[in-house]
Structures are given as C-alpha cells and as structure tokens.
Image 1 (cartoon, rainbow, N blue to C red):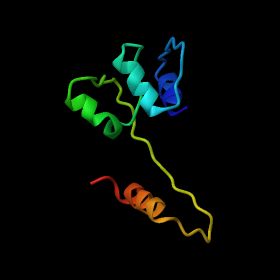
Image 2 (cartoon, rainbow, N blue to C red):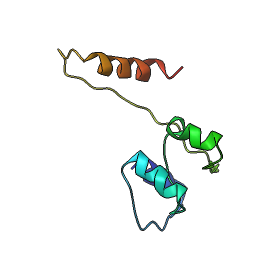
Image 3 (cartoon, helix red, strand yellow):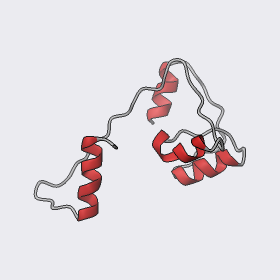
Image 4 (spheres, rainbow, N blue to C red):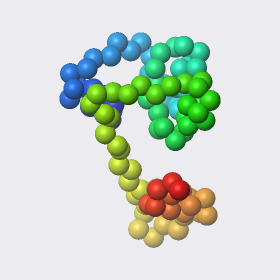
Length: 93
C-alpha cells in the first residue's frame, strides 16, 4: 500500500502480473530476473555489496517509512521482542 500510494501520487503506473508478500521471495525472484522488488535496503545489503542486485534510484525519491510498535497496556514482551522494540526505537547501529 505504501508503494502503491507513492506511485499513484506521482502518476506512475506499473504493469505488475505478480505481487509477493515475503522479502525472501521478492529477492529470489529479482535474482533470477523476474522483475523488480521493493524491499528494505538493510535486508538486501549483502546482495547490493556483492553486485548480485542493484538499487534503482527514483525521482522523486521514495520517502522513508515510519514504523510503529503497538502493545497491550500490561504486555511484558519476551527478551527477543524487547530487543526488536529497542532496535525500532533507537535505530539500527
């Protein structure tokens, strides 16, 4: 939806025949030449560094996304969930 809204606001229409919901599948399909993918840059950084995939620069630039974390009022997250929340709140370092 984020990408669709960006494209619509900029009068860009894609002729997509397939949409994938998994980052892993998007990356694998792009690697074998089945089109382009829209993924978080950090998630695909190794493939970019190894020149397996390349970034397409757009004009205008695709805006950064905001991520929210919502939890139940008295929720006590597991250790892993707490670490994920910390990464989201503080950014990846």
